[in-house]
Structure formats: structure tokens, C-alpha cells
Image (tube, rainbow, N blue to C red):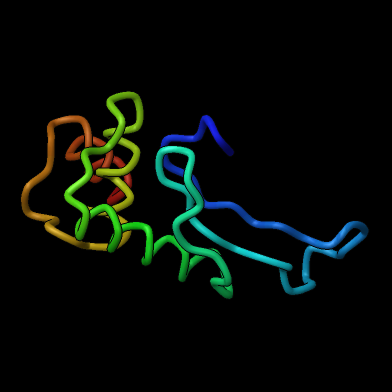
Length: 95
């Protein structure tokens, strides 16, 4: 995790079933654990976007379009301002 720029992690007990509650869900930013004890991945994603917005952090260049699509198409945040690549994806998904 020390080399992770942005990350959401999930820790399960050894031998746990996929349906079992995780031991921990949290967020790392630039290799530092900034939030832990989150109950599930959807909450972690929402908290992640809140942190990125509140801290005014730019998305890593190699993940820019992934995060833009997640933010603007899936979460419907600022959906009227899309880059060309994300607009193309949105059009393809609407078919």
C-alpha cells in the first residue's frame, strides 16, 4: 500500500467467505492510510470522491478517464461536462 497513489482496500479474515463482512475497508492516498473502518466498498467510493474533492487532488494521469467516467456517468456528478473519450463511452453505454 505504500506505493499506492489512490486506493480503496478491503481486508478479509483468512478463510472468510465472499459474503462475510470484511475486517476492514479503507482508503489510502499517496501511500498513507487516511480512512479505515468503513463498512463497505460503496461507502468507501463515496468517501474517496469526497476526499479528492475536499483536498482538491488531481486524478493520476493514467487513471484520469477511469475516474472521470465513474464520477460523471456512474455517480452522475457534473454529468454535463464530459471529455470526448468519456462522452463516447456514455453514448456507447446508452445503446
